[in-house]
Length: 432
Image: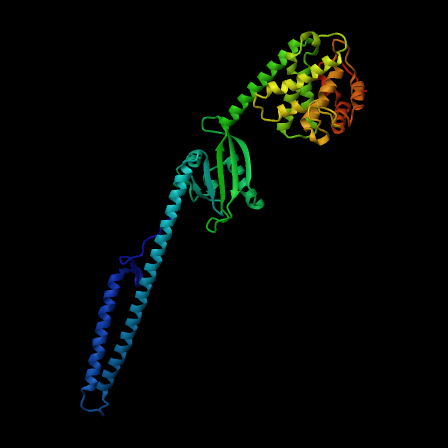
């Protein structure tokens, strides 16, 4: 807000609600001071030039009173003039300071608008009373108003309904907790399309002039979300294709990879792993057998037990899967998981002899899921085992080949939620 300049042309209030220019007042004061000074000199001259020093008639006293009053009024006029000059000096100094501060404010505002104008997202600053203090061009477009129509007004004058309620709630939360607040929310634009906006609220506390203000940054992540969904769909299609290739190569193990991936995802969720590790466990379980495409078909379809050499070749195919899939840019640790699936919890596995917590949690999960699905699924040389028997066989290697915590998680899941394993697509099993 700009201030009005103080100058000589400003009007001074006088009696009767009238106003006169300051220049005229100074002119009248100058004339009055000259008149009173001359009048006092005249009185003094009359007294001095009176020949009778003992004269005490009324004309003497009148002349003396005139001199005294003139001198007093002259002193009063001089004092008033001095006060007016001092006031004028202070007003000029005050105006210069205001102009200086206004210039700095205009410079800062221009710079802020220039910098924020190049930002793709909206930038809004709320003052201590939650009024709009600043909005850049993008934020103003979102509100459907010009920046000058927004600044200085409270949100209730700009927004309504759920949008207003959410904004006031978030501002109150940031002020009360004094911590940044960041989240992604779906917002419907004027065309009725849903946009995914990341909101970032943060209280400004490192500036004396803006202390207590709240900065709101809005970034449109819609294109990023759409691209991510597209990428995830393509990745899932690639995974399904690779799994289908393995199933055609080894018809007796058809669906094995898919079931291992599903069970690995279930165990990761039961262990409350973060979404990236859960997804990595599921993808690694689904693709761990992809290397079988390089194993001779007669080994995969053999109806008798495999020789140690043949069994080792099948196991080595898991590492081959990691080598082949390394060219795919997975978001999570899919390839490292595949490289560690053959490690054993007691350190007797390979290829690096890792033990215990040195082995990635995702690899330990996939190892348990693969073993369980292998035991309950029929093969060319044997039928599938009931769930209880499969758990008992795997439990013999608890702490040796497998992580006991993951085995307990699997056991608890099967005992308490057996119907949720219907997707294993094997003959109905008993849990005990």
